[in-house]
Length: 575
Image (cartoon, rainbow, N blue to C red; front, side, top):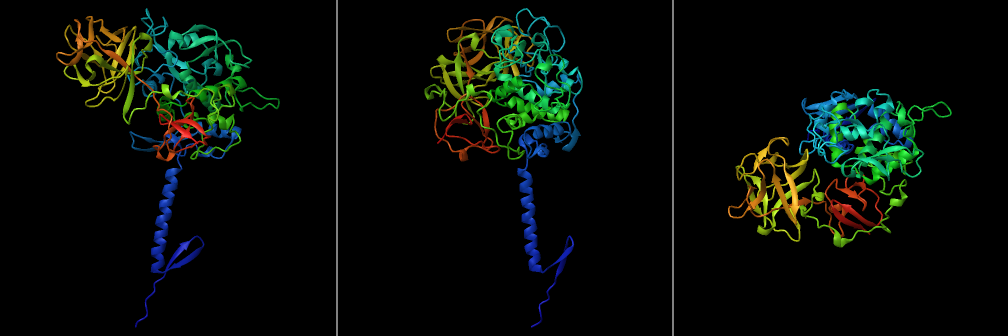
């Protein structure tokens, strides 16, 4: 028998050669394939949140003061993102838009679902993107105001940094707000006031002497509404980090920031960077008002305009790693552990799950709808009308609800309510269509977010028209109540939106038809029950009973003590 021909291949590895037989080559090929797949898997999982990739990687392992300085270098450096127009990754250096360019930027960063400006100082304004010229004759939407406008509000007042760039037009702190309320705020610090001397409509925002416990500053402060306090806190965390070696303490800024103030050794006080009373207050605000979808979407939009991000939005609770309870814990950009919800800066609001001071009453909790459904409750007073909230229009007596447009009438779909509550899917065939409530002057608007039109009445006829603009003729409505019935009247021809049971449809009539009711979409959770974390959807957010975000089921799973938590709008018991 002839000898086997054994062929050896010599593969060069660094400074040595390896002799491989054909069998070994097959094994080595398998090894390289497995190793390559492992590298891909590691690459896939080594990513920061919100598609930030490895943007924060240089801060990995840092703590406290060092973490703050590392984030400063990151925020003022380069940012890589996928450019949709070029259809490829691009890397650009941090560079803010021009001050004039902010108005164009707001079209990408600060519009509500109905296309109006998202105003965090007032809850009655309904500015279009172009409504930034006029005067401050009053809060937009208030009776008698005809030339009100929004403007560019420096949440960190421009006088505090002497109008210097790039702070002057940094989108992470310059927001569109009502000009009249912005003017009322002036350049006073943010704070809390128990005796306001001025306020926006309904007391949404307030101005008065500072009542924050322990604050050395007792003069006037501006207090934003609770629902936006976390937004502004995270803006201030960003500013004191991104511009840690810049002037932020001119004028009234001296009461909030150290800025370029030097310590006894002549070194700029970049850490902590903020006065204790303000820092503690903002940490409390951030804990009590969790990161919202609005902030996440705005963060992503701003990142593609000025080529940096706000890490305090990407990593909820990051302030604890820099100034708070976790400042001795190393930060991990791709395996972030969200701090426990209890804030050391607000012990009075500590609701320990082991011994809750204010436990929920399971009997009062709104039932959670099935996937794709929402819970709606009937409203019966003007005070329950909330601009920006979603509503469905119902005819309870006929078990019908308003649906999609059909040749200038609205179709009807079957819907049965029970004691002023209903659970239903919306905005699809055979289901009610939801409208978003808005304001145009002193009147209301009803915006169909599915068909992207405003309900309108533009002719003296039994019709229900549509308009593409809130300011269009006939797109403004007067809403009042008679008992549980909603009187939705269009002043254009004094027709009312009603239900016609003889020719089933929702339409506008001058004569009496069957009255309708307004149902408002609710935030809801289930009664307390057990649910496995393993059964939860990926990236489901976990909250404590105060609504503070603790982490997610995929990235940054918090260490939960026994108690009750909210997981994906369902109550969860940890035993």
